[in-house]
Image (cartoon, rainbow, N blue to C red):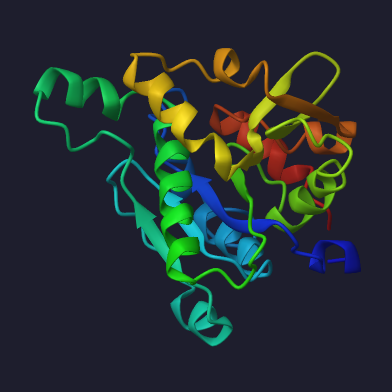
Amino acid sequence: MTDRSNNLDGLAGGVILAGGASRRMGTAKAMLTLPSGEQLLDYHVRHASKLQVPILIADNGRDFQTGLDVHLESLNVPVIHITDYGADLDSSEHDEQIKTGGALVAIESALQTLSDLNDLGVSKNVQALWLLVISCDSLIPATDLWQKLQCEMSLAADKKVICLKDDSHLYPLLGLYQLSIERDLKNYIDSGQRRVMQFIQPLVQAVPFSKEWQNLTNFNTLEDFKQACAALPK
């Protein structure tokens, strides 16, 4: 981790998105095992803990546990399981829609949680304005992701979402979301909308990344995951 990634100005916390259906994978991505023997969720929590901010786990009520409790306690890094926004609504029909509503309901819950933590003074950073979003279909470490994205924060002052892109795609679930968008996102979800790209399009600043990172992202099958593991730096 470089000196730049140690500069945490503006970072309120990180959320690990671990609640997807993983139908093509056939098993929960968060519970996949890397060649080192480490589970994928532990991998992301371990790297995120180096940022010394609250870590939120959005696992859609699956209550995935990490094996890093002692390590995290020694670092004084809180790990908080969060419930998708709207998951406790009364209507069973609407409730089911929320449970399968995609990433935005998890991001909304994370934004609400971090805003509450800021109000309570839990955040160590008085200028904490951003949520780091880390998807479980990637092996990019949280520290490297933060290092890459934070460079754009001052250059894109009018943008409230900063995410990675390759030659043809945006990666909105590998990005930074400003806490100030929470109310707008809530209203968007409450109106019945769930499309990530439609919401972020007016807000987003894209950050190109190298082909090496492309090999570490967007795995949806076990074969994809094996190829991503093979691309991990030795």
